[in-house]
Length: 90
Picture 1 (spheres, rainbow, N blue to C red):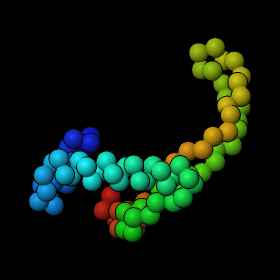
Picture 2: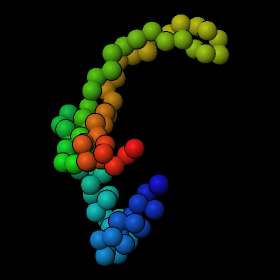
Picture 3: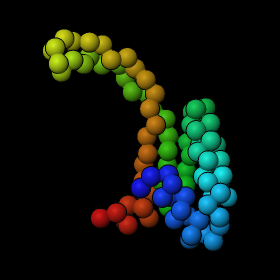
């Protein structure tokens, strides 16, 4: 499902216009991104939790040449699904 389809389905279920729904979804993305950028967790009860974790530096290999290279440490976003979401996905 892409963003346009998500906006359309949310608008239909919530009896909102697509324009208003897109504004709400964009605001959610902005607030969630800002919070994660600060290192905070974003928890949606029943859906799941977004958090930031530090991925350690490691040694990698270029698949084309076989050369060994150093992959630097970085922060990545992690998602842990909630119980309600997990029970619906089977």
